[in-house]
Length: 135
Image (tube, rainbow, N blue to C red; front, side, top):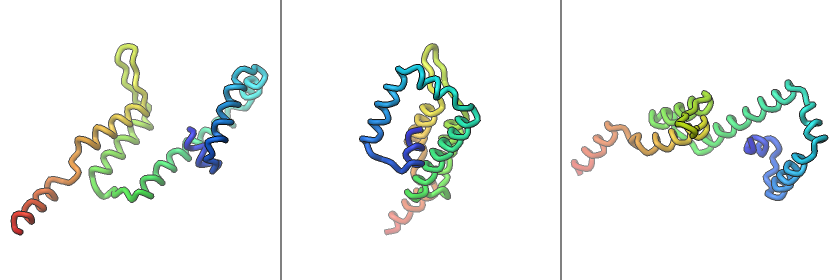
């Protein structure tokens, strides 16, 4: 959520963020301010949340584009697809009292897939091996 707010406001100052955190903590102890915030209509909060989470998703896609991720490579497409489906799908894993939510699970899946999926397709690796043998 913080990334979305930073993207919308274009304010990246550590001092501004620390000040906002300070006021959020201070306001949490004041019942009148909590009542004021709770009086904001649900559709308004929903609209703000809609925009905020859309900005987070758009920023994620922008980062992928800026880093020139090749989505023609099946490996990149698979990793991105799994991360998006698990992260957005509300998936969770519960083991006793321990629970991993969708964001944690999508992070773990992304890391594991990045480690286990081959960087190059088998046909590319064989082709490079043949070229080296011919030289």
